[in-house]
Image 1 (tube, rainbow, N blue to C red):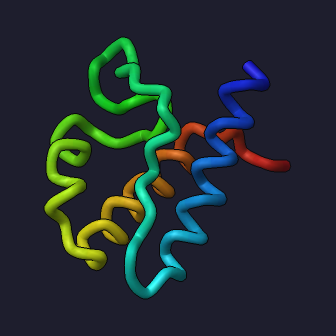
Image 2 (cartoon, one colour):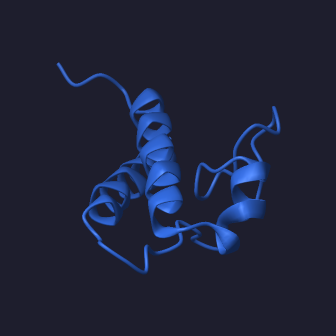
Length: 82
């Protein structure tokens, strides 16, 4: 469980950094290309199949929008801090 939380925290931190980049927005891929059991999101980067497909052709603004969705997903997966 700790590994999953660490990975989720890491992707959330990377999402914040990616949002601050003006151009050449980095890919969220961490080479853990495995879909969750519901086949909704990649367990490594929290992107949907459609987001993964369009990433290379997306503008920096579109990539930032995907990163914002990733941040929301990571927050939803993280336990509430008391």
